[in-house]
Length: 217
Ligand code: DX5
Ligand code: ZN
Image (cartoon, rainbow, N blue to C red; front, top):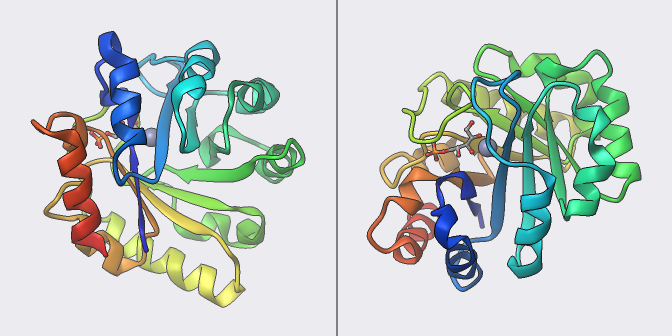
């Protein structure tokens, strides 16, 4: 059964506790937490102290997506803050294999994300080290953007790669996921769908999560 990970970037930060409880009590599977540094992406979001606070209330898996330069400097900090999955971007590193190994040595699941311009083939030699392959379906930095159709081909390629390698990697899609495209994304081979704007701009976010789950089962 594919998973839904609401992106807390689109939550109401004046009512963050309420929105975390909404996710706790919903059919959502994970919390998706977007960390941005204003360098790797042209936006700044939140970091470890906020995630550590959220972890006190959040009852589901914490899926932390680092959109920051030199992520290898902060792996232990995010472990302490409560990350269960920690995802770094392929484009940020000279030594991604080492970074993935370090994430796992700290007791987290290791995620690797690729931007729209990065071919899936760039990760083929290290697929066995990747617990979560996050394929960006927008240019990272902001919620509420439109899904890039080139993503479908990349999902199919990733699925083939994972099957051929007999790897246990989950494929996660992030950006522009809607009630309209969710089923197609899952049919192409995705395991986890991030949804920010679709969930939090809905009049009833928990009902939207239920509808998304319904659409992909
Ligand atoms: C953007 C983030 C996403 C974002 C998705 O860089 O990685 O997680 O919150 O937002 P939506 O679902 O609104 O496209
Ligand atoms: Zn994200």
